[in-house]
Amino acid sequence: MTPIRDRKVHDSFRRSLPSYSAEASPQRRIARLLVQRLLRVCPTTNFRSLFEFGCGTGHLTEPLHQALQIERTTLNDLVADVAQDIVVPFEAFIGGAVETVAWPADVDLIASASALQWLEDPDALLRRLAEHLAPHGWLALSTFGPQQFVELQKLGSDAGAPGYITPDRIGAALSADLRVVDLGAATFKLWFDSPTEVLRHLRRTGVNGRASGRWTRRDLEQFSQAYVDRFAVAGRVPLTYHPVWVIATKP
Ligand SMILES: C[S@@+](CC[C@H](N)C(=O)[O-])C[C@H]1O[C@@H](n2cnc3c(N)ncnc32)[C@H](O)[C@@H]1O
Image (cartoon, rainbow, N blue to C red; front, side, top):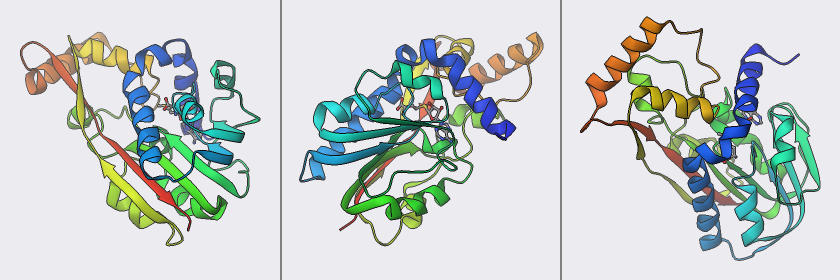
């Protein structure tokens, strides 16, 4: 049976599907940058097979297919309904939590963007990656670091994901069989007219699936006031994004 935790995350992302692609411009930008980073260091653009987990509506799948020639694409997401929104051709879709589903073997390219942070134990998944990669295979992965949505964390909110991770922890968790060629992090802020707009952005991108309970009007007012008091600059409020990435190969 699916744990309640996964069910809440699933339902939240499923609800956000109509708005996700339009609202998730940071994730779109992060996915495109990941592909650019891969192209900078990877000597080939031809891959026999791709396995992408947490593919969502295809923000990473699309630029991968534009930049590379891939014979067989296997996609995974917790939310099976995303498959109908993906415009590039793919050979297989595996619905379910990537920690529990069967993975393809001997993959040439394992890729993922903005999904690993949803796993309770991201280190465990990172440790597994090398065994599914073929010799000379590549890994291109981005997720989020501990400064992600730092404003919400400072206000005591439990919205956001359980598995934020630093580049150092990624490097430590990856198997010694992999050679890391690019590992890094960046931060940027999105600016909103009000805390209510921040909450709307979170809802429309589905990333508030773990937030507990329903808020009263008073909860909302208190949250908004605290957000403005602590973070507002010139009448606007920020929301921090902290993408972290790794490109590695199995020599
Ligand atoms: C923020 S979206 C990112 C989607 C896409 N990769 C992108 O860059 O826009 C996170 C995705 O991870 C999926 N996800 C969350 N937990 C997952 C899990 N345990 N296994 C597989 N997918 C998961 C969600 O359903 C959602 O589609």
